[in-house]
Amino acid sequence: MYLIKFSFILFISNILQYLYSIIDIIFISHIVGDYGVVALGNSASLMFIITSVSLGLSIGGSIIISKYKGANDSIKYKQSITTLLFLSALFSIIISVLGIIFSKYILIFMNVPKESFNYAYDYIRIIFSGVFFIFLYSSISSVIKSSGKEKVSLCFIIIASITNILLDFLFVYVFKLSVKGAAFATVISQALSFLLSLYFIRKDIVFSIDIKIIKELILISFPCIFQMLIINISFFIINIMMNKYDVITGFTIGLKINTFIGMISWSIGETLSILVAKNMGERNYIKIKNTVIFAMFFNISITMTAVIFIHIFAKNIISIFYNGDDKTINDIIFYLRVCASFNGIAYALMYVLDSFLIGIQKSYLAFINSFIDSIIFKVILSMILEISIGFIGIYISMAVSSVVPSIIGIIYFLMFIKTYKLNKY
Image (cartoon, rainbow, N blue to C red):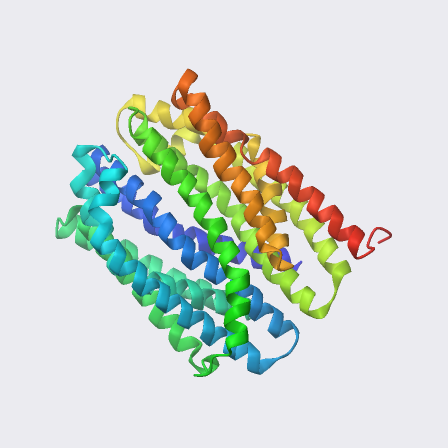
């Protein structure tokens, strides 16, 4: 089935994209140690907030591009690509300038441990200087994938990932640039991805922007942006809360490992949004229903397989990221036991159903669901439980945060089936 094939390619693509930060941590862990790892963990939580804008725009853009492709409207198809790139460039420049100016004050607000502060400051300023490449590559990648050429996008990511590893070795090991070297490697690799993908889609760029498409893109993208923002702001706040505990290194690495599980849902969800949007353009509602049902069961199966694998081989997996003291290794294992367990079922359901909502252009409903997951549970419940049981309360809140949103998502889906009278199929 196309969903499986497309999801697998996107999963590999997301894994390779995520390797940028993972490779940085592996190199820095072995060269700088715990202080460098904590610096990258805090920097990552900040950058996730920034890239929320890029991801939101890319998701909204892929929905519109897929819709016009499904409707065989080549003019609006190309105009939507140009509009997406224009908005991405505009936002990236604004964010880059603001980030470079205020990065020090943001890190102070985050209460980054003093031993890690300079490392984090060096890393984040260089990353902010490359936000333009990060944003534009994300947008162009969504264009390529929405056009059904996901294998091409994968090839570009493979090239960039290999480049990142080689540059990490060169800058961190050979030139001894520490975290600065890791940041330079990431920015240069993203720039390479951007240039390769830009050359590939050059014929689809028409220097014509339709104001209606801008409005449509904003209408769909902004709820996606806010959705991504509140998800990443919740982790940003949690990172601040965790900075005062001596398990922060274990939390940072545990979260990185757990993110691999999340990538399964992200990949299936991204594929589902594109397929649903295309089917909406074709008005094929029965296919939407069947695809969503299949995606739910498929996502749960794959996610739980990954959870079981990580629990069985936890120490082997941890050794890839960290080779330090036993206490930190046990901290990582404890995090995974609580936050990467049966809650994966709820997360898998929530993400598929939110992606379905985005695909039918009800992204504001997905935003509401994410608000419940991220703010009400991850943040507010964490603050309440932390008072009585410390960081364990934060872990519990993270573990149960997807339960209520997954139930709400099921209700939304059943309402869709009823609206289009699909019950008999």
